[in-house]
Image (cartoon, rainbow, N blue to C red; front, top):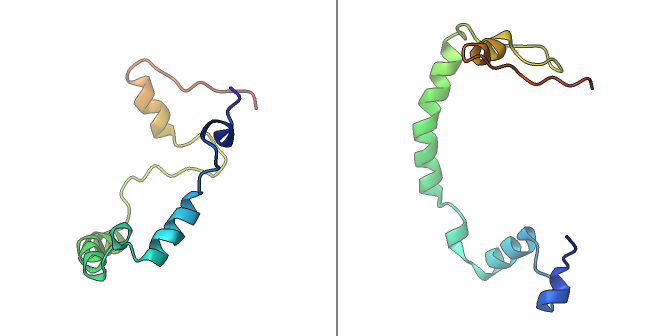
Length: 89
């Protein structure tokens, strides 16, 4: 497919960052969270993070970076008669 936006619509569209900066300069607050909303969000998330920090991970299927993943992933698929497709890369 050969498509050039400018050929069909007469101009090159702004990138997401250009549009975001432009809207910020215009004062369009609908694109941004208010401080009280951010604080309320952290009020919901912080207790969960605190519990995660306080409790050790139980039976967490960790694996070595660069490997095919934890054995539990293969076992999950094997229960339904499936397997990962491996490549020779």
